[in-house]
Amino acid sequence: MNIENLEIQIKKLPLKDRAALAKKIVKSLDDLSETELEALWAEEAERRLDELEQGMETEIPAEEVLRRARAGIS
Image (cartoon, rainbow, N blue to C red; front, top):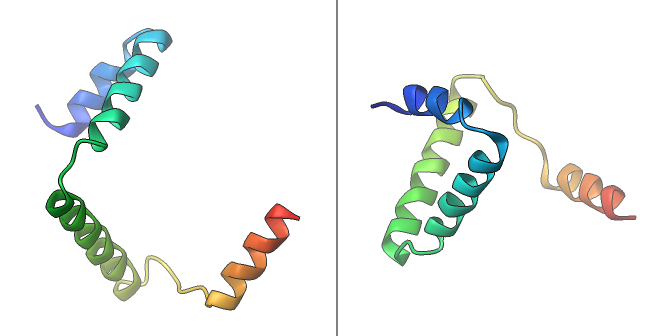
């Protein structure tokens, strides 16, 4: 079963069951080893770099990110 099919099946579950499943999935991420976490972050960084290189995303200067963050908490 691929992720798309799994997602379709999960969406058929009652809301309460989906929430319980989501909680279990998030908790399972706490059980990852340092090596597994590093691999996931490396994969995410590669994905983001690919999106930038393909023009699917644009860079945001750090100053702008910080300005938005400060505006959001004030």
